[in-house]
Length: 378
Ligand code: UD1
Image (cartoon, rainbow, N blue to C red; front, side):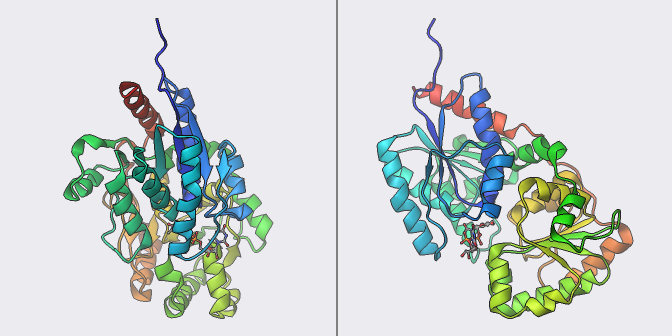
């Protein structure tokens, strides 16, 4: 009897920090599938600082990339174009059966576009999420990547309706759950205790004292001096009532320095740290009483952990975290944020339930599906 095989490999792409926790369980599930899926990994180099990249590869046990395109930072046009130019030769040198992309960053759309023009099928993990806000660079990346994809894996059921509204064939769409939650569940027991992280950065909240975790990095929140100053002012008001820990993204840190807002923050009592490693972040999040964020991943992780989350944006592409989870969209006005904060102080914040298929097995479903798809097409 001949053994079933997928013939050829799937080329996986990562570029920026939120991609790493999504690709890790997928590559592991590829190896563990009944008919294993051979894969190669390309890192575009969109994120390159050790704190934004290296520790994630180690902690998440991601294999060393077969290729690092080393693109670094730049305008959207420059970054996207550089990724495309440097990605194409890999497809020529080692033609894959399919290219697999995750999420919504510039690396996602750039590699999808190169692949589809060469007739190579594109697989998109985390398809169909829509904020409805086309001013978000990620929203453009989401819409276009989904249009280019042959297989679309979704994290929540509403995503399929978004895709079908945009003319995407229902047969290509598979609801599989959330690979980011796979990583969360696989790594919770390895989380670095928050106290260790606080010691590393000094000025920790006292042991057992409730504290809030803050992250901010969206261009709409941190690129405009007036918006950023107002948000920091609101966070300082909260920080006077409850300690806040703020692991800072390089974009945010650069802008705070550029706009001369360092003084405001230095006097606030908010504990500012550099970007945390994945296991440090899990430890701090797990111990926090409240999360204030503009990140997509944190909206999902807090829902999975049952921690109230105030999202400092006007919309979310992850509505299930609001309808079923612990997330509240509070926008960016001081009044709304402080009202929601006071409500949290009085009531303990919003409770929720775990969304369907956020069970730690999404990558397994994806691998089985891709394996079958490749075998059928062999
Ligand atoms: C990118 C993603 C965003 C994701 C975020 C997570 C896009 C359009 N955006 O935004 O969806 O939520 O990653 O972090 O792809 N920088 C460093 N070191 C690094 C990387 C970046 O210092 O390793 C600084 C540079 O000054 C750079 C800035 O951060 O100009 C922004 O980086 P960039 O990759 O353009 O976008 P992010 O804001 O990180």
